[in-house]
Length: 499
Image 1 (spheres, helix red, strand yellow):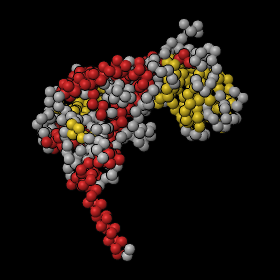
Image 2 (cartoon, helix red, strand yellow):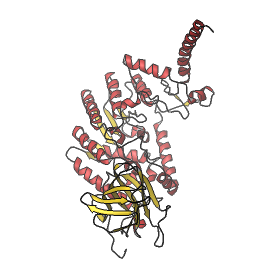
Image 3 (cartoon, helix red, strand yellow):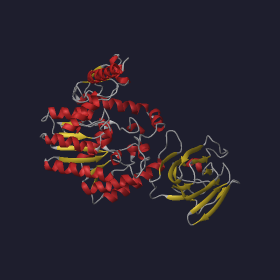
């Protein structure tokens, strides 16, 4: 083939591809945005709720006077519990910046709103709304020229994927969907009630299932560079000003969290966010380790709560309960810390195990059952220990250094072990416990997790019965130096007789 003919064929093929690909993507339109389809969706493919709901509201400017914004956690709400003409405008993984963007468009088009309710997520302090601009199922609606151009470029020229091929082969079918219209809400409410009833009937089976399910962290990393607390607060401030300009009442509320997920987040950062939020607006705070957070049958997974929780939140908000203001914020935070401690210490895990959680959740109002700086322990032959002002220096002479500790007795169901230690290496930490008086330390009755090089700060929730016969700690599996800056166990003291 000649060079000219090759170039011609390449250009022709590229042109044909550029013509065919948009047509193919338009016809299959997984997320239904190109068709602006409110009535149908493909089974098992998430529509773009944010985009479609915005377009729907713009097409029906006088149908609703109350909007409920938030993330997929809003799926447990039935908006008519809030007001007769309310609309649940939530989107999957919806964050504050997206709600601001959508409100600017809706109010700019003259929607006559009375109230806007906005749910605040823990991930609002670190998830950037810009991250969703290239996400097919979460990109928000734009009406500026650049935004419209980017929209069509994103959806019409996207690579063909397996879902497209499955649609083409007829494996996925378009089915009627009520996710945008949100009609027949009485029937929808009953569906939510029946689903919750099913979880209640499963009882212990469901409790064990969620106990064995990992926390929903959504890509979270406790990295100072990742947080955007000030930016999120500014977005909330702008929502307040925007709504005040249009004479719209705002209601902000912090979602509850399942205890396993709550315990993995840096709660000192959450508290910082709440303090700053209270300076900008009052808000209703359901984000705490209360009975709801600890009850597995109140959760469909480790992130989403059931209808009765959402309904109670609406009633509490209407009656002014759990309202946080600038004047009472510190008092509320102190109460929540105490509540967290009480719930953790008395929680009976459906499947007993040692749960590692974020080191920023420090027990409040408890007894110190053991302090390594003051207590006794016995190192093995591979371990040398020296105490100084920095803490307890541990030198490992081999691959199996360990320290033996005596019994720890507590009245509470669980105890919390708090540890701060530095390691020269990336290595493994192990804690061995005994499940019976005559048991021996073994790999089955142990918890193991990685330490990174540098300072490690962590908590362990441990069934108190597992420490009543003593325990063993292996600080690392590599020879070298470790510094235990702090190692304390918290609970409620038990008399020496064990009664």
